Image (tube, rainbow, N blue to C red):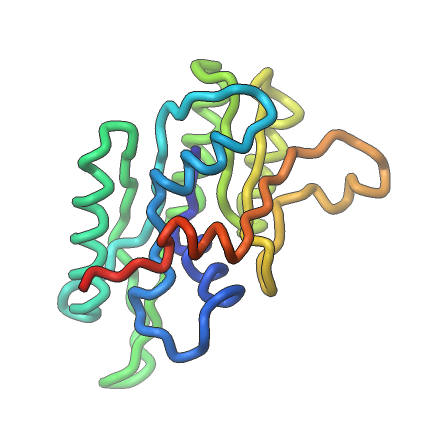
Length: 196
């Protein structure tokens, strides 16, 4: 399971949460999410590994977000199946007090590891959880040029779209199966859980 964490969190917030939620709202338990998707596969499946790709906030610029990142990453890492892949977030200053925080290199990291795992053919299937179309070339490559079976997953709500190969829909070509995750999944899994 390859989880584009911030994309999953932001699309869940946009689809299911009220505006003005705190920065740590919409947090997803990647193990529970991966187990749910695995349980819903048409073929009996056992979860192998969960790779979580996420930018790491700076404690200097985003103290609260950094604290939550550390707490969640430590909790996830207790499960040996979960591997957190993080890179420091980059900050672009707009003024002396305002900045824009951006993940850099996360999508490329996910894409390269997805392709490497698919070529190694050590699993029966891989699943990409994201709505970020920057990942489409990697999904297309795995789908068309490797023996690996690939599926995708996305929230079924406003602003969230599956990584379908849209150009191929009219041509009837092969596309990955999509696991649509609903608001009940988000709520039942406690995906919006916040440390008290």
